[in-house]
Amino acid sequence: MNRDQIRARLRELQAMDVPRHGGSTFAYVYDSGRPDIDALGLEALAMFGESNGLDPTAFPSLLAMERDLVAMAASFTQAPDGRAGTVTSGGTESILLAVQTARDAHPEIERPTMVLPATAHAAFHKAAHYFGVRPVVVPVRADFRADPEAMAAAIDESTVLVVGSAPSYAHGVVDPIDELASAAMHKDVRMHVDACIGGWVLPFLDDAPAWDFSVPGVTSISVDLHKYAYTPKGVSVLLHRDRELRRPQFFACADWPGYTMLNSTTQSTRSGGPTAAAWAVTRAYGRDGYADLARSAREAARRFITGLPAPLEVLGGPDSTLVAVHSNDPEVDMLVVADQMQQRGQYVQVQLPYAGGPANMHLSMSAASLAIIDDVVAALVESVDAARESGPATVAPELAEAARALDPATLTDADFDGLLQIAGLAGDSGDLALPQQMAPVNALLAVASPALRERLLIAFLDRLS
Ligand SMILES: *Cc1c(COP(=O)(O)O)cnc(C)c1O
Image (cartoon, rainbow, N blue to C red):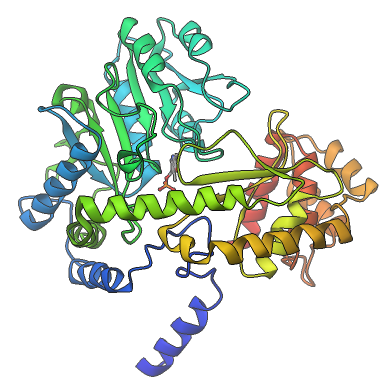
């Protein structure tokens, strides 16, 4: 291919994706509405894309920028002197490292556990799976916030970490961090605050509950820059209250014949691009810029909630810029509403029914969402009408039957193929045929148990990739 063809093809591929700008994509991407600063970030991304964070002595530029990013995150989280931090590739990596560090601080505990509210991000379950730290999952209160008494009661000799969210992804509510941290501190256990999505917003909201290092007992905090710091993807910061707490995070290997390997994260070779981009973008906005962006995104969330048409209702009373909405009327199916929103160019995210809670749709508001929020509400009013008109998504009885008969522990390829066939999702050569409407697929997943959902999703990804 010549260069023009390559560029044309790249544009063609990119056109397949959800929009990255405009404020109508309510998950995955975050738009500040500042194309000038976006461009600056992409310039820095390209400039350092070939640099390698593997060795800070070979690329001291990246170390210098990492220190600046950690310093900014530390100031936003009220970290004390002596704090230590690391730039990672994202929220998941920050969380993996927080769990691994907590585990390795206690080599004497043979079967380590961590106490999670049921609303903790799935990344903690991934960390549990990778590192053999058993999750002790504690139900949350009716308002979706962690239950501090039940969490405290779940801490025992095997606990290496207690977790709270600020806020939780699913419902956007901040857990009672002060009570959780106090319970952890009294039992001499580490407490991690997952502020991946709130850490660059809560510092600028007047009504934010206590969540940061000013709360005694909080030992680590994760904050993603590729969310509300509006930087290109690939940047999060993991902060520890002091260097001693961070020490088990580091890995060195001299037990092989090559270079001495010394890592602060799970990656070894890593691009300098995201760090440089984040450095550039965070310098451009500064504290005041972020305060404005946070208030815009928060205002978008407020106006969206105020404009919700009946029978929709917000779940949990969000503390930040995330909103989860469900329907009070079985005739208005949220899975259908979500499809209708998508048809109107509003990309909301479906959250399946879980632990007795209803199916709902999630919106992470960007600063750029404020300018279009009236259109979003108007699209929602239309979507609700259309969903009432078309009725709820249903699962054919034989399909529900087939799904219920599947045992997640023994699901085979043939079982999955059979299910695709019955669901009308099998293409000509037995591969996947992606539907235009997701509601029927989501309705099928909704009747499956979480364990079966996981197996079906993995079989799906296996085909897709
Ligand atoms: C996004 C998010 C994560 C995971 O972050 P990734 O950057 O997607 O890996 C973890 N916790 C919360 C609360 C989040 O919002």
